[in-house]
Length: 305
Image (tube, rainbow, N blue to C red; front, side, top):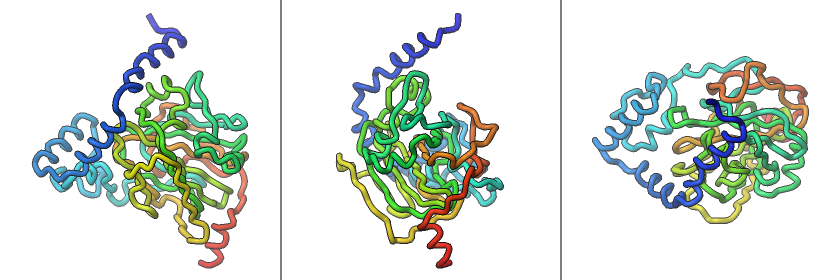
């Protein structure tokens, strides 16, 4: 007999109960150390098991030789071979491989997480009300990267970095069951909020950490965590002219996680083929622009070029 929606929600909450008591920080620290260790034949054996267990497609990797990776981290953040992800002719490219968790309209400041769960844009970005206000009644997309996926994150459109905000938090899993069972999950977990000026206005891409995700890194900063200072760290990049082109790599995860993106009102019209749980690939069409509001930083960079 099929479970009713209410019973499914109760079931999901019961499934995630152990995560509330597990020593998630300790597990993540230990996993990070193990993943960064050069274990020789042992590392190769672990990678080979992982590839088989999760169905990782190594033919897409720049180096498909499992034994060539000295650490699990280097395997996990492996680059793709040239041409593995052609870019669609679209204003906004999908930034990651993975699956669609949710996407759509922001109801004033509320982002839909799962049935019965929402969280605020202000909570997501670490409490900055003025930053959150820019996305009132805008659009969002939450994309989940599973262990088998390519784990580098790319920029959906041209952008100039203005801020990076490290927000400390929990380290719950971010898989679909946990998203249905933990209220405000993506605004509770540790995260790195990246703020850009784009030709279409401000844009936020938030890298959300999770259990066993040893670290998150960006191309302009390197590894953001560890260390984990236990407080918000807000770094301004105004005037530094850090410009990324559409499709450029912007960061990476060590083990699976989630990105949450925000756009202002009337900015993006999502791909009509998109739907929750649908598999996605980096470089496919995520959507097209509804307007063309040129961000000042990008315009200035274009003038210089």
